[in-house]
Image (tube, rainbow, N blue to C red; front, side, top):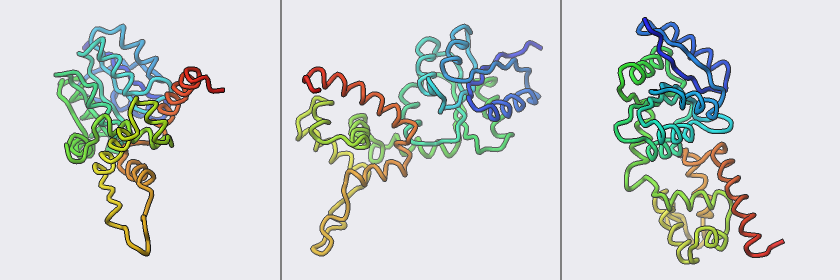
Length: 251
C-alpha cells in the first residue's frame, strides 16, 4: 500500500505527537507524516506537493493557520486542509469563511474532541474528500453569517479600531472617513452587538456604561477578538502610525 503524505503544521510538540500517533494507528491508510513547526515551514512543504494534504493548527508563530491556508489555496485550491484548534473564536470562523475557495474540501475539528472523533474528521477530509465541520463550530458559523448578528467588514473594522483605543479623529484619518462617517460605523456596530444605552439610562444613573468599552467586552465574550489576533492588529497600527507621522511631519 502506497503511503499518503500528510503535513502536520503544529508548533506544540505534545499535540504533534498525539496527532502523529493517531494517524499512524488509523486502520484506513498508511500515512507518511511530515512535521512543520509553523505556518511558514508548512507552506514551503505544501508548495512542493501536487495535491497537498494538511492538518494545521490555527495559532502558530509566524504565519498562522488562516494566513497559511489563504496563501496555499491561492496557489493550490485543490489542497485539502483540516484545521484543528482549541479555539472556536468567531474571528477565526469569520476569517476562514472569507478565504475558502469554491468546491474546496476542508475541515475544522476542536482539540477537545475524543481521539476517535478527531481521527474521523481527518480521514473524512483527507481520504474521503468530504468536508467535516465540528458541530460547535457550525453554531458559530451560523451566528457569524446571519445578517442580524454577523458583523459586516466595515463594522468589524470599527471594532478593531476601538479595541486598539483609537479616537474618532484618528479612526477618521486611518479609514479616510468624516467624523460623521466614523459615528455611523460605530452606531451600526453597537446595534449588531445589541448595545442599547437607553435601556439602562435614568436620572439617577445617567449613562450606564461607555458604549466603546462595552462593545469590546461583548466582542471578547463572543470571540470576535482575542489577544493573539490583536497582536497582529497592533503591529499593523504601528506601521500605519509611522507613515502617518511622516506624512504629517510629526516628531
